Length: 431
Image (tube, rainbow, N blue to C red; front, side):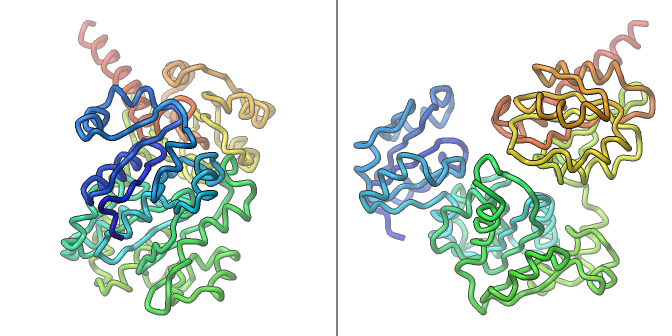
């Protein structure tokens, strides 16, 4: 893609939009930035960079003239496909792509792309760890950590690019073609963005859109919709999570089994995988133990933004649970967890916009308290917890009503808990 001298507008100026703008500037495009509500952006270092680069911007809404005067539009994942500025662009015949597609156009390394309703971050991180342990140079990014466009001009130095890919990112691909595409699982999610489960499924399915017989599609054989999808794909299909694969890898954990199949495709010895699996500490914000206060464990599971992700966490905790959950509702069904809540949860501390829905869903089976802030929820949970209990933040919801992202939510939770721990230790010293 030759963009030198081309007029390109970036719509949406969070991390991926900023990354796209930097790449576009590096390749000689005439960059513009448009965001519906980005006044806080003026407080960032990136804003100072845009001023130094003389990049035209509109930060409090989109205007038709600003959007239509372009050769290409690049959108952040948070911008829906039916957004008004995209309608204006398409009416003028202006191409619209996402940050992942832009990065792909400049990527010179084979791509391993991982999608799924749950487990993407863990599996992407494990694949990276296995490849690095095998001596490969690897970029890890996409929907996790570093945006794809940040370092893609150095991709000739990579052996692989491992990308966590969301349905939002897949909606805006055009030529994106991973060498290995992994679909881990499919369950209810993002129904605040997609009109129904079929639209969500179709968005996920686009990860295989441009693959051919030289590529690989790695699918969970335990999920009927993914088994049925296999017959439609041009890529070579590899299933994971079957009984024989469980025996071969000496594990029943679907994440490990998926990584094992990717490693096999890449020619990596099984022993390397097993060593990485044994030593894997987990990922930040996913069942991350923060501290033990007066015999009560505090667990950060901020990455759990669906009911199924929360289920995975709750099922793995043996102690009685005080559950902090809530945030922005994705219009998913919380009630699928009712039997588990009845069996394992002592009390729920609900936060965010989803508080009323959480109370109406679980109020008949467990005590539910509503809180305006995460700090209030943590402090109240501590007062209710008894020695041997576990307080877990596992929200089931997105973070955008109260926090920039799930990472910020998790970090705030950890800061609150560590402050409480410091206060306890200070009191002990004073006594």
